[in-house]
Image 1 (cartoon, helix red, strand yellow):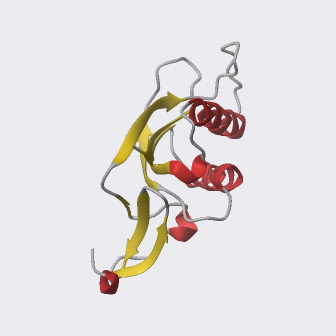
Image 2 (cartoon, rainbow, N blue to C red; image 1 turned 60 degrees about the horizontal axis):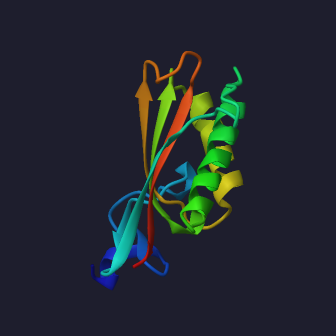
Length: 146
């Protein structure tokens, strides 16, 4: 990866987030184009986290589910000895995706991850998820030192 090809990059201990020149700036939409994993890193794959609380209760509100899912993601990250700064990639599943739901997701992503560059991310609209009433799910690829 040449420095000339990088428009914006954020170097971390184990990976670099990159937005190459020639591609539009994805920052306003809450993601980076790619995450380059450094040699010798260890990958941790987190299963999709939904909006259920620790008792399995699922709120009906989309924002509440997104906020809880990011809270659940933080708990899983902590269990792996990681934080949001170690997330290289997210995959997001949204039931009945709309621009309004995208806006809510972006706001909650900013709340959960803060102002730093966001991970590489793919949002996939889906007709339904595993549980009745489930509207949002997020999975993560985490990169840690070996």
